[in-house]
Picture 1 (spheres, rainbow, N blue to C red):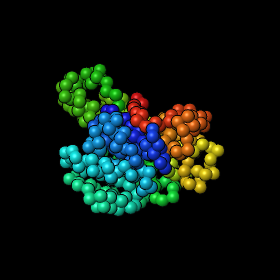
Picture 2 (cartoon, rainbow, N blue to C red; picture 1 turned 90 degrees about the horizontal axis):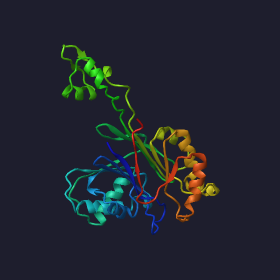
Picture 3 (tube, rainbow, N blue to C red; picture 1 turned 60 degrees about the vertical axis):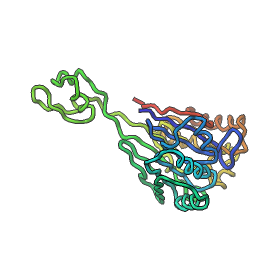
Picture 4 (cartoon, helix red, strand yellow; picture 1 turned 90 degrees about the vertical axis):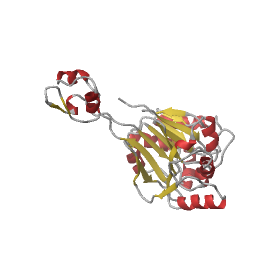
Length: 308
């Protein structure tokens, strides 16, 4: 099952000609999940040829303008295509007010159901068939949340020779064993999945954290992430400014990545003060702490692979 993260925007505060405001789209097979929707989100969706009508859920970190100004356009755009499924919007207090006011003041034509869920504390906020999304509070100038999408463990590797040895012929019974069902062999003996499967294998984990002071609980929440998208808004020389504005430096993001033992750190939400060339300094500082760090660039794609 494919899992990919598309960077729709990587900037913070204000959009730049080649850097839209922060937005990340996660595609899991045909289902799309949007994390924040800053200005320019629609442009990157179009340039990446992504089918926005397949967006099932929008997860919003907080209601500062640079994280939500792209949402009204997406709501209107979705009315131009056939959409039967509801659109879920999950975010902090007042996100419902923002959505309702935008629809009313802009006199939007909405021909599908919008379901808004406000969250106030940590916990699972969305559940799929074999995955869940958890929200956890961050420390910013207004209520703000980070998110993790984590898949359930997968069955262990199937060993066909063991199935044959236990009298289970090739065919539908093998599929049932791989799905975790006990089956009856040709001689009437019941064969359990654990007799023909190896140890269970881990699912994948994606984490999204932006606009926050660094603190220890973040590492606990994002622990073991295959891809950790985290703000690295400033270089370390501006740590004091970052603290005053309740943001993180690239180096601080890297230290969280080390503590959380993530696989890859992708920095995002850069201050507009940094040119494309200047971003190399942020990357240098982060890689000195956590070598497997990359810079998010608009319209970059990060495949998230199974570890085993």
